[in-house]
Amino acid sequence: MDRYALFFDIDGTLVSFKTHEIPASTILALTQAKANGHRVFIATGRPPIIITNLGAIAHLIDGYVTTNGALCLVGSETIACHAIPPASAHFISDDAVANTYGLIVIGERDVAVYDPKGDVDRIFRQELAVKNLHLAKPLEAVLDQRILQITAFFNADYETTLMSRLPSCTSGRWHPEFTDITAKEADKGQGLLTMAAHAGFDPAFTIAFGDGGNDTSMIHTASIGIAMGNAIDALKQSADFITTSVDDNGILNALKHFGII
Image 1 (cartoon, rainbow, N blue to C red):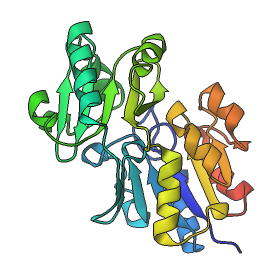
Image 2: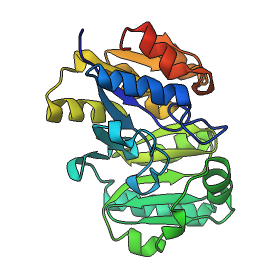
Image 3: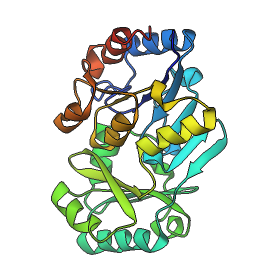
Image 4: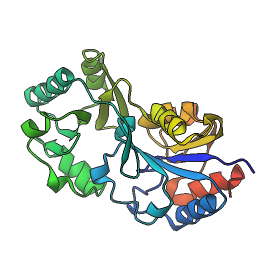
């Protein structure tokens, strides 16, 4: 049997938006995949400080592509770190204050939250059940650090306008109300390749699972790109295979389909 490196988004892929938990069938599937000699990697837009919902599978994970590829980790070792240019980070911050939209700013050490309209609280704390944002530091203090990612709470139309003024950055949207902005060099596809180079596996033996727009590069880069049944239509069109939803045994069904378990 060929051994694969499996890459999984978190929200809407491993973790249900309905229950905020990993379905039992997914835990079973990953346990079996690992026992069969395959590797398990996380590829998420979340920074490490808010990756708090993977306890049931933490012992199975070989590495993390976090903040959409801006920070890649294996254990306590940093494999790659790509920061947003300071001028770009300050430009986004100033624009948010001027136009009163929310930000989550991910620094090298700390996180800041700017939430003038309550959107961060409503979506991240209430809808997504994200923990640890209470540990946020003041915006000015975090902007003095290297900035790995800025989650900006505006619509797709304004995203197009703003990103045209940020040529050194890229944007990955996985929710209609916000997008994740990172350095140009950082996306989940590049994170997959970084992990392959570090761990010494062939990218031809990789499978990636996702549901949102920020998963597109990973779906394209992996040998097999799989969209969840609950994925956005654009990602489904890019995928090699569409499985069932996160709440309908999607991971289990896909891993069975491809003979991983």
